[in-house]
Amino acid sequence: MLLTFTNRNGYELSASLELPVNQHPHTFAIFAHCFTCNKNHTAVQQISRALNVNGIAVLRFDFTGLGDSEGDFAETDFSSNVEDLRAAAHFLEENYRAPGLLIGHSLGGAAVLAAAAQLPSVKAVASIGAPAGPAQIEHLLQGKLEKMLAGESAEVRISGSKFKVKSRFLEDIRQNSQLDNL
Image 1 (spheres, rainbow, N blue to C red):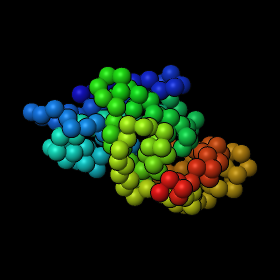
Image 2 (tube, helix red, strand yellow):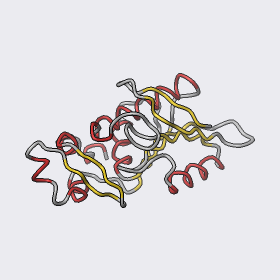
Image 3 (cartoon, one colour):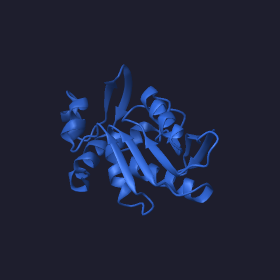
Image 4 (tube, one colour):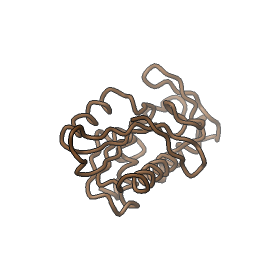
């Protein structure tokens, strides 16, 4: 079921809620996609469907500025991803049931680690290939770091697509290492 919810900046975030067939959900989960992916990434869909078969409802959504969500990706950072996760959790709590499980892939995995500490309903977190620190993200910005450290934005190519990234993104990931949350 396709739906939208609003984040704290007023952007409509596009989401898909997959409910288990022929059974009531045991719990609700939120799936956070990778850095420049979206809710329809093949791995995200396959994992969500496997969870559905086991009675878990999954909310997959696009972070601000990605996929079908509103906003400008260049204006986002790690902290805004965590805020988007909190908005998703609030949406579930208000309309269905508070999430008991957070799942994240890559940078989404780091974001669920950060968000879990702020969401008392969460009982379990699954992080798939998440970077523990900024160095694992900075390699994606190779050749652009000097420009970004000078306060400029940079255009990076990830998986064949171009994305504009501002210096605040780099500053934010450096301040939000998830090693302490492990």
